[in-house]
Image 1 (tube, rainbow, N blue to C red):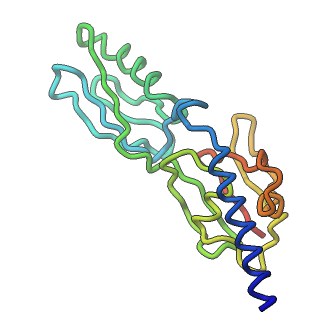
Image 2: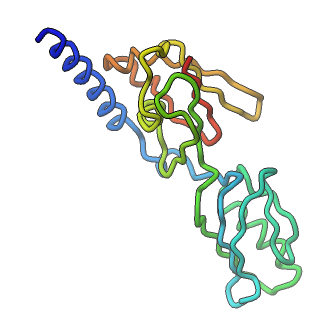
Length: 191
């Protein structure tokens, strides 16, 4: 009977931490605009120009190709920024082009989990997600995981960055501000 109380207590703490992490999350639209990633699929069209409608996938180097505009860098930019550049390039050939860009698939907006989780792998983020949410998608930690030694590896404009994450703090309902929001390309390493 005592073992069931211990399990129940642990499950209650984990559920509380998960609920708190979801409640304390700021919506993506409030914090920043979506940045295009390699692997994303864009639908680009120019009003009244049927020949200039394309579905393009952002290449691993971050570029796309579009008729009359040539190769354009897309990764790390907002849709509005890319639209302005394409409009500028097309102005040489079309009077007052109206460019429309829609993100058909955010396949490049992914994070990776490796190490002592039940289901390591690549996880697409269809919304802004934090560490606890992605660890949950990975099936949670294995019994052999060192939860307080988790590291998030992130590429930034200044180089690689390593962010420490202590699972036990959040599991107990503390340190909710340390439940980092993830960025595309982040790798969570669970030793």
